[in-house]
Image (cartoon, rainbow, N blue to C red; front, top):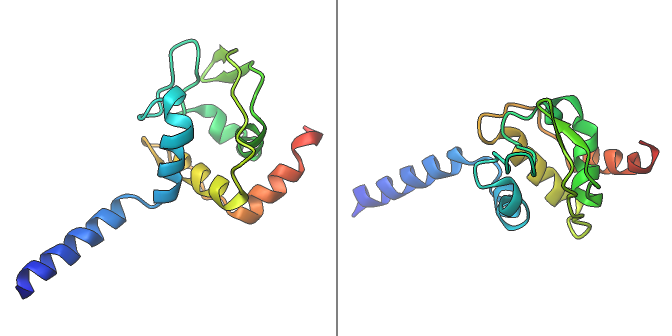
Length: 130
């Protein structure tokens, strides 16, 4: 009995270490995966990839604005212009946005710095000025 409890605890620790941003992953699956795909590859010529996307690295402060307010189209990602508009997700608060962004920034081989709810709020305050 004791051995099986130890095994269950060990397996739980492994599972929790494998995904740093479980809320971000749940939000991604609910709001983003239909277009950007489960693996972040997007849809060729229509929806930009998030996996290995240069846009995420070059435009870190714009990501929260795009998620919150949507994008009319015309984003260039990895040298390809994507014109398909992205809907807005105004219902996501700064904690949810930061978890989502952190998940995207660290999924599918991406290795971008973490963000915080405070940084997301600061970025959102700048949305209209860009």
